Amino acid sequence: MSGQNPYQRAWVEVSPAAIEANAKALRRYLSPETRLMAVVKADGYGHGAVTVTKAALRGGATSLGVATLEEGLELRKAGLEAPILLLSNLCEAEELRTCLHWQLMPTLSSLDDARVCDELAKDSGRRFKVQLKVDTGMSRLGCALKDGISTIRDIQNLKDLELKGVYSHLACADDRNTTVTQLQQQRFRAVIKALPQQGRGLCFHLANSAGTLLTTTLHHDMVRVGLALYGHPPATHLADVVPLRSALSVRAKVTLIREIPAGTGVSYGHQYVSQNSVRLAVVAIGYADGVVRALSGRIHALYRNKHLPQIGAITMDQLLIDVTNAPELGPGSTVTLLGRDHEAEITPQTWSERCHSIPWEILCGFKHRLPRVEV
Ligand SMILES: *Cc1c(COP(=O)(O)O)cnc(C)c1O
Image (cartoon, rainbow, N blue to C red; front, side, top):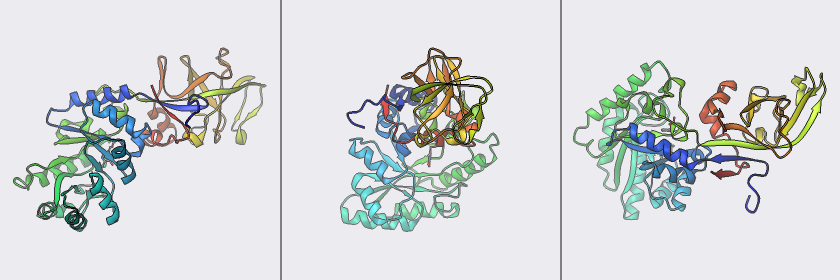
């Protein structure tokens, strides 16, 4: 993309100021003892991991969560020194060696994992900082609940490891029914309670965005916030707990205007046939950019506070909008597919409801062919 005008065809605008403001708002809501981890996996939920990380640290986050080794390395190579936790599982000793070298904390799910790390650390002359995950009900990563306490003790007895934290992950925190969340909380608390001595100095953490906004009793020593940091509530009933600002907008250029008479089929499959004559605009963005094809005919583009209906099938690189009511719009005009334009806003929630997705998937679905532009 270097040397090219990023505003040429379609692009993603990212506001570091919004990320920083969201981190600050979350920080104000947390007690002073509770730390804020910024979850910046999947390239900062599509916003650009380095940009997001710097803004979140300015806003009061003190550690970072990533999914993959590559994501951790990207942050270290950008010179970022905050603690980084790998939230996924690594199963190759070589990967763990890379973690040790770059001071990335792996998530362990068993004593066997811990022994591998201990061996690696012995050869290196430095202690390996790690965290243990305990499964309280997600059934994904983590040691079995019944083994939690003994695993923690055994890991603490390994000389070349430094167990920094013990955590778990909520499966249903965005559900209005809090039964599962309460059960997970009870289980997590029971682990903490069984460790009065050994637990000292460990960082216990459980809450994602939804858990963070649901109740402060889930906060423990740290919260791991992703979606809310980017300005989006994880559920409508959690929307007003902390004031959040969307940090991302997707914009694209109109490349062609045409008039079609009544009765004209539009785009692949002719899913749309005009009732009247229509002024059509071709917009240079499509499903290969992350505008989900299942949204065909279900979304709008914004232009100067007008909501212009998208019509016909969304194609790989282009889509069509009805601009009959926006005669001032012409080739070269910029429209907004997602995010804010003047007073109007289209949210990832709106999209996700219309294509049976979730806001998380919408945000990290924007492809890298869209340049990220900081505003
Ligand atoms: C992705 C992730 C989070 C952040 O989730 P949000 O719902 O986006 O806040 C927290 N913890 C773990 C383990 C994760 O994988």
